[in-house]
Length: 273
Image (cartoon, rainbow, N blue to C red; front, side, top):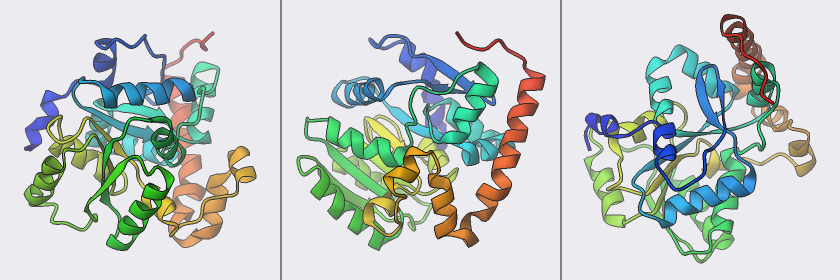
């Protein structure tokens, strides 16, 4: 699939509007439409897309860090505009409150949403795994099989294949006859790669999952449930990996809030009802 494949894909809003699903509320964050779904609605929507013939859907997530990347990377913004974007984390909730007067219905971060989706969907699926290191990929596949043994998990490749010549990987994906592909290459590389190379001949749904495989494999420990309930998992991650994550959180959060306040001043709008 060439770079021109992205031209064949419609923005998420158009695709949703043309489906049998009822209209879905959208709360734009820094100009990017983010879909405002409850858990049951989101799970049912993904199941519907995976079990019907509606073409190709690329799901991505927007959090404070991704939003900062989007502001400085127009190509990434364009790619997200062709995705079904879900809200991830307290940062976009703060943005929604400042911009629209209320937060998102649910925090649909990929680390929770993907495992919950696999549990929710009873129909056996063929699920491809692409990205991370080979050790993490293999360990994640083992744990996924324990978590939802009725699905089949296919290890396509780690994330260190030749990006300049992805033909072999694309052929593997095509031959695997995948329903759902999870791509874990990090933002914005994973979203751009999916947008450039994948279409409905490869999978019905592709989800850009970031560090999900690290968590599922056990390589990275998740915050305790009480920390997550306080919406403070970012603090736990910063405590675990300060050298890698301090820029993202200590610098990135104030930068994100600055972008939000600037956007509100430049684009005033009435709060939602």
